[in-house]
Image (cartoon, rainbow, N blue to C red; front, side, top):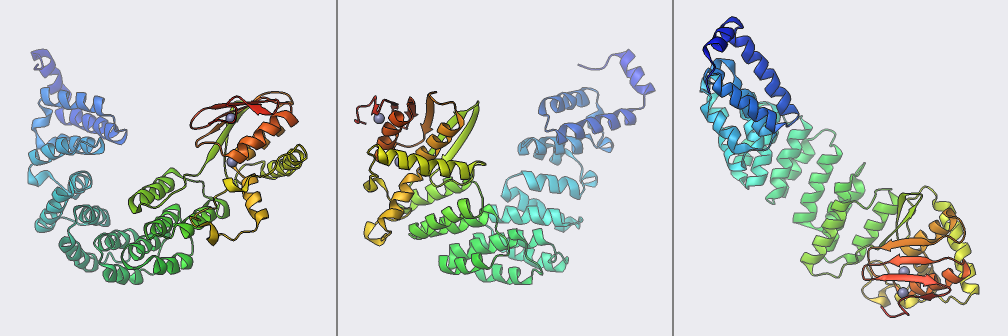
Amino acid sequence: MRWSQSKTTLLQTVSLSSLALHFRSLLRQCARATALLPGKQLHAAATVTGLLSSPNFFLRNALLHLYASCSLPYHARKLFDEIPHSHKDSVDYTTLIRSCHPFESLKLFVQMRQLGLHLDGVVMVCSLNACARFGDTKVGSQMHVDVVKFGFEKFDKLCNALMNVYVKFGLLGDAKKVFEEIEVPSVVSWTVFLEGLVKWESVESGRVVFDEMPERNEVAWTVMIVGYVGNGFTKEAFLLLKEMIFGCGFGLNFVTLCSVLSACSQSGDVCIVPGMSSIYVDGKLHQFIAGDKSHSRTSEIYTKLDEMICRLRLAGYVPNTSCQVLFGCSDRDDCSEALEEVEQVLFNHSEKLALCFGLMSTPSGSPLHIFKNLRICQDCHSAIKIASDVYKREIVVRDRYRFHSFKHGSCSCSDYW
Ligand SMILES: [Zn+2]
Ligand SMILES: [Zn+2]
């Protein structure tokens, strides 16, 4: 469709360049909001009005940014190629380098250098990241020269990106040199260096650096834990995981858990998926893992737990210590924990914590519903059976395999599950 005669006249009245300015500003807004559909409509309108054909309006540049921000690198690349060289600047190159395939990114970076375009820290970081992804150490080393030449070595992000390239390809000595040049390494710098050590030197030297770190983020903890698992130090891995969650207040985040599980599966090691029990109270979900101390009412929960264990014991509960495998202990002889300690770990099972929380925060006599991601253990099963009688409650536990409805001291599964 073309503009009708009357519209062309109108366009002539309103200057074309001010219309193009309006388009550009709208396209920029679409890029910021990653709003692809209105952006595409503007693209179509710019084409039919003929505005797109003039490079002086810089609409292709604006569209390039839109498609790059919407993760459509091929669309972005097509527009980029249509823009005359005289109308492309460093920002256009950087946008494309950031969004396209690493191989293309590196070619573009080389082109930028040849054209003598302005190279800033952002484009260097993006290109180094492309190096790390593409696996090109040669370009990486050349870029190290650039980093020094352009005087960017004081930029933390740039040094981290450079270290990351070296770490990815096992050039630990080079990574170390960069790390030592950083005046005040940030937590990210420490973490990249730590990853290199764990990956290419040894988990023990990684641990030395991990202990030296002024502060640690979740990535650092994960690198260390996964390093332990990958090298067969399962016990150390779980001790560290425990310290991360209970000692340092980090939640058991999905990334760490997945990394640990994936490292376990790769190393063929036996891995214990942390059990988690959930209970809804007043429409709010409360989740517990074994030994959990993250709940806002932790001290009340543990007081209630002591009281509950006493009452259960009086009613005939005997802790079944054979249910307890200690964190990371594949060989039971290794774990010479006193029996009492083993019992205490049993009492801290997530089902029991959820049960105590349910007992103390709901009216007496009302039923309780608990969800467990794994199979309920025998000890919790017998404890909850007795609790249903002692507290005169119906307690329903949905575990990974089935429902258990505990009432008057017995379970619907008849102890067969
Ligand atoms: Zn249990
Ligand atoms: Zn049952």
